[in-house]
Length: 136
Image (cartoon, rainbow, N blue to C red; front, side):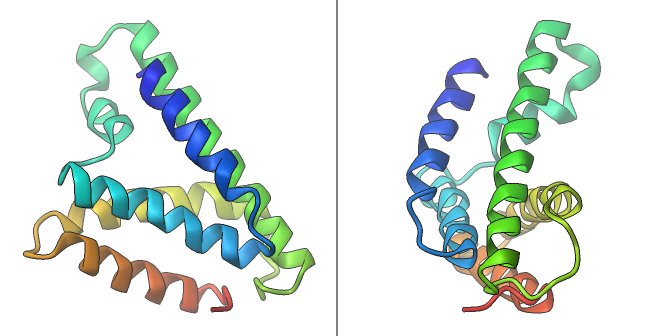
């Protein structure tokens, strides 16, 4: 989990070079799409979270750190979008980050039940962003 988290952190740092908050958030979708395209399976953090009662505390602490890393990154990108007006929402990033992360993780699980999971995920995530007033 620690290696997975570090790998994901490296991917997030690349996304920080986006010019707008909305661009960062849309780039984040690519992390999920890549996992669906390459592995065709759930995020490791989600898979381990489901097994939380049977895993050692050390592993679950890593999963929590992973979730914290992603929700903090999403909160920051969301707040950037609010300040550059590419996210038209009064919801602060601290509230949006966990909502986005959990919604996208669930969409990933749902997409895996469909014939073209990457496309299904993109369609659902695009609809979510539109509903949350994230500009294209």
